[in-house]
Amino acid sequence: MTSYRNVITIDGPVAAGKTVVGRTLARHLGFDYLDTGNMYRAITWLAIRSNIPIGDAAALEELALENPVRITSPQGDEVEVGGHRVGTCLRTPEVNSQVSLVSQVSGVRRAMVDQQRALAANGNMVMVGRDIGTVVLPSSELKIYLTASANNRARRRWQELQDRGQDRDFNLVLEETQERDRLDSQRQDSPLKPAEDSWMVDSSDLTVDQVVELILSRANCLGGATPR
Image 1 (cartoon, helix red, strand yellow):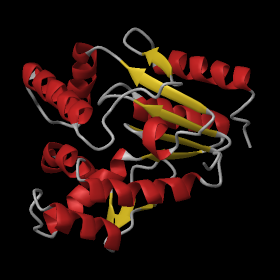
Image 2: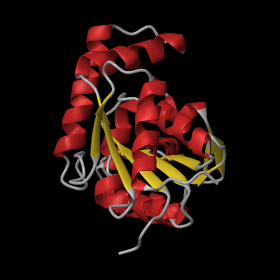
Image 3: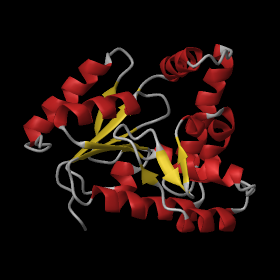
């Protein structure tokens, strides 16, 4: 099994704070940052644009294999796929509602995992997602499972939408959060769960800086995650 030195994986449910924690941690360490969720969002966006039915697993697998996703911004929030530069379109309501279904397709996951492992091969990376410590990089040196209560996560998600000018009912956002949890944890291929040797961090009552400090302390104790 390939050993990934100086790679920190952060898994966890939707709106647990993985993105902001991962970006902040990578900045502190001088590491590269990859939000693997944006890769699945890119394939979802391309499928919608290409009029490929979300239920057509074979077509989605072919789409993912023929259109590698390139990360084009240091923060990992802009990608290139199928000859298109995509940023804010990754988080439209249409993509949000279908990305979990696309990410359940085994062929799509295999294509994304191969790309993610290649990106991590050089080390010095913080990679966030839902199956990074369990499937993508199980031999990475430090695996974090970041979580929070469903109500807390829904509140964060609701605030993000408000900040983007999207007025949504909080109870609806809570229902969507719980449904996403159900889909992610019950899918047959790479279900969301902590790796056996992951470090569980509950961010419900912690600030981003406090979570980052905890992870940095853990990394130092393990002797890994050396800033470049």
